[in-house]
Image (cartoon, rainbow, N blue to C red; front, side, top):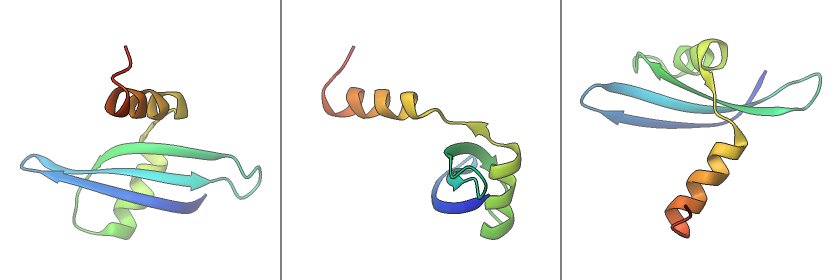
Length: 72
């Protein structure tokens, strides 16, 4: 899977990442979210792609609605 974008978040409990990847065969894009070690960006990115939870586009759209329009 080709990495399109990576966003990292950190707090006192650890490092979290959202990785957007694109299938090299189907060109389908998916986002994966995962807790990672925070020690090595390359291996953390790969870990999120392999073991992270799929972050559905519908949920991303819903979050944007909630943050910008106060959607219910």
